[in-house]
Image (tube, rainbow, N blue to C red; front, side):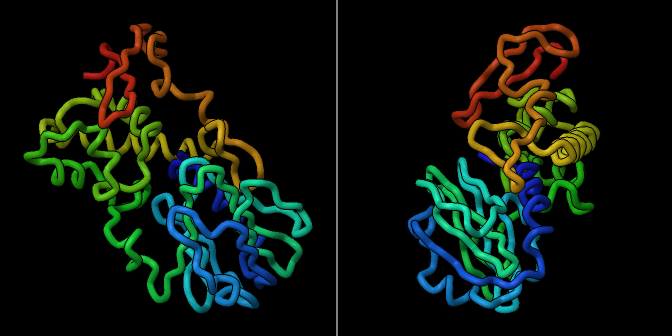
Length: 271
């Protein structure tokens, strides 16, 4: 699944091509995504100017004078900028065509993505209303994690992947941040000290900032907004490296299951 850095990479890739441009047409070939695409979406968007392209967690927000289009890439989706004349292929479900001759195309083989419409403040929409803070914002801190974790017996990796605690920290980057902070993924979150949470919060910020800088993680299904894959995968120190030597100490990396997901850790570096 595209994680926060991949979505932010997409936002930065598509925004310069379409921001402040007017919609010439909207073509919906397959409305049956995770949630149905509104029948009247073409009428809502046609001739409207795209005012801004922002991100909240793993959602892309396209702001128009009359509302906000909330997009999600699902498990394997992408949004790309293409010439308006580009023929559609099998999994190209929605095209937003702009007056400048560009189109924004939603491609989603598994159809787990979404295009939702919100009038008024999009943060009040049901998919955004209960979300925690952005990990790169000042609102997110080690103290917040410490306070929210008290008396909980949940594994710390599962805890930081909960969007109520902090948004956008998926499996890949949770593994990397926990390794950077020296914390085992299966320790109960309520047993971790404030000082270690300070270190973990900083690690989350550093890992995500680095991933955004280099363009997101290369996942086999993911393509960024400019049609190019990300390249952070070549720098991964922990995720997907079960049985390989730790790049820091050489100890064999172990794998456990947490919430039905594989989770790798170094038994020497992470305590």
